[in-house]
Structures are given as structure tokens and as C-alpha cells.
Length: 387
Image (cartoon, rainbow, N blue to C red; front, side):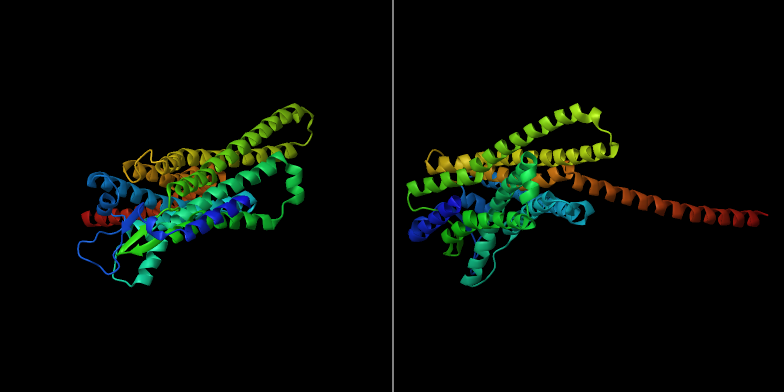
């Protein structure tokens, strides 16, 4: 609650500041009335004009970002399809949370790719502002990305309570908590990205210009530090502490199982308990990998934002584009982690491969007899002619 209040306070501060000083940090060309020679927003040519990089380097970053967005869209769509079609994906709350995470990553990749390839067209100011707010300023992609970070924290907290405090989890967990865990990330993304971006983004002289919170260096530094704490350091502390406690509990349980296994009389109960433990460990391993990927991909961008506010490094250059590509990579890597580590998705993939192989085998066996029968007829016909 205190975090949300702080974010709203910073947003209201940005509303009260003069907008003239906010449109100097980030900008991208977007033609409202189509003027000759105007480049598409976030195209390679606008990279070289909006950022202090060479045209060749801007082309590399543009192609890399488009590739990451396209691959992320396809990979997240595949994982989402696997989660929705798998029968075992509805048996626990963690599957609902992971499905929600996949939806967030897919939405972020779709809006990022759309903003990259969207071409300028003749339109009035209202429509141009709508396109600028939703696509050219990458507001939705950034907001959903922040929501995904909050979703990872909620998954960590849910796993922590279930494994470290199982009695309290069974007694107090209710279905509405799952729905709340899905709604809270969206609220978090709106407060930390959507509102601040819409406040500081406008169409000025046929350009979609995205500014930054704050009209002086102090306010910009405060906002950068707040983003670093809310979107990187805070989640990282939650991941490290939560999964450290979880791994410790799992190790103790393994020792207890080994000591009491000789006294058990029910083989079925032992097998069921072992299966449950394996499923829990699979979920934990998957989410730990996702958390580590988040920490590696975002450390450069969050640190760079603070250094930029301190004027220690240039604001818009090759490093900014490189670190942006790193942060976009996180949304592309998550579905591959789910596909290779998460048991539900991996099992669905094996089932689909087996069905395709079986279908091809049946098709081949149905074609072979008919081909052999046709060959026998041709051989008989040739023999008759020879006689």
C-alpha cells in the first residue's frame, strides 16, 4: 500500500510540473500528416536521428529488437496454447499464475512488435495521440512488463507460504486470492508505467515524444531510484529470500523422508508423496530459472537509468539500445524455460509429438498395401502381355 501511494505521489508531481522540460529525453518520429522524407517511428533511420549512434549500429539494434519480439510472440503463444489445452494445467493455483505470466509476456511481445513495424499514416491529432500512447511510446509493452515482474513476486510469495507454512496455506487460502494475485500485477503495471508514460507523452510537431518524470535533476533521480527499488532490487530480494527459505525446507523434508521411509507400510502413499514432491521441485526449479533470467537481463538497464540521472553516462546512445535489447530478451527467454523445464508444457509437447509420429506411421502403413497391390496388378498385366 505504501508503494502504491509513493508511485501515485510521483505521478501527481509529474502532472504538476511543466511539460516543456519533459520532452527532451526520448523521442521517435511519427508523422501525423505525412510529410515527405519522414521516417517511420523506431525505424533504423529514426534510431540514428533520435539516438547518438551510427546508422549501421542502429540497423543492427532495430533488427535484433524485431527478431526478439517476433520470436517471443511465437514462443509465448506456443506455451500459452500448451497450458490452455493441457488437462493437468487446471489442477493447481500455480498453473493459473504461470498461464497468467505467459499472457503478460505474450501481450508485451505483441505490442512491442506492433510498435516497431507500425508505419506512419495520414491521421488527425486525436488518432495520432492514440497510436502514440498505445504503440509508438511502447506504453502497453512497458506496463505489461512491469506487471510481469509483480506477477513473479506473487508466485514467489504463494510458493513460499505453501511450502514453508503448509498448515496456514491449507486453512486460509481461498479461490479469491488467486483472482487477486492475477489482478494486482495489472494495477502495479498501470501505476508504475502506464500513468507516468501517458502523463509525459504527447504528439508535438508531428512527432511522438516520450519524456521522463520530473522537471529537474533531483526529481528525475528520485524517480529512477524509485523504479530501481520497485522494479529490480525489491523483486530481487523477494526472489532470493523466498526461494532460499523454500530450498531449505525441501532439503529438510528430504532428510525426514529418508529417515521415516523404512517405517512406512503403504507403498501407494509413499509413491504419491514422492510424486507430489517432484512436482513441487519442478515448479521451484522453473521459477528460480525465470527469476535468475530476470535478474541478469534487467541489471544493466536499471543501473544505467540511475547513472543517466546522475549525468555519469550519456542518456541516449549505444549502451541504452544494447541494454534495452537485454531487457526485451527476458520476455523471449521465459517461454523457452517453461517449454524445457515446466512439466505441464513439456508433457504436452511430448504428447503432440507422439500424435504426429503415430499419424504419419498410420498414413504410411495405409499407403503401402495399396501401393503393393497396384504393383502386383501391373506385374500381372505385363506378364499377360509377354505371354
